[in-house]
Length: 124
Image 1: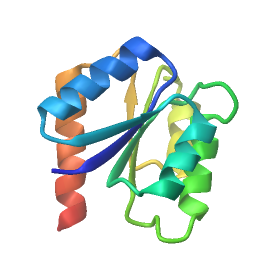
Image 2: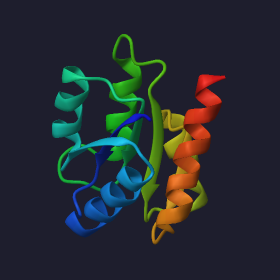
Image 3: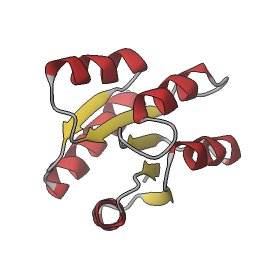
Image 4: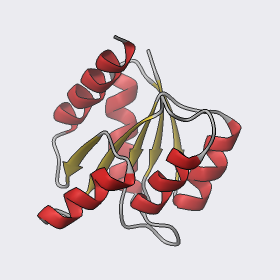
């Protein structure tokens, strides 16, 4: 299927997300924070990044902006997965370059569905 990078500092959410996306047949890597995510992106570009907003160091929107500024990353999809639910937060996430936005708590099944839809649309 697809290569996915999950950037999440909460171990329980990260493990749940990894489990569900691996069940869906994806190859999943993880990063605990924004700096680790940027290093992982320089090593190998995924097809999609599931990105938390509130992490130590760099925020999700800042990681997304830096990802969008990296050469060769125009086809990398970003799904922001966060507890930030205000309308202004959602707008900021999309302005930073997110392709989709999900609010925690979330349904793991819905996450897998959204990932699949994003990947399918990107391939067409």
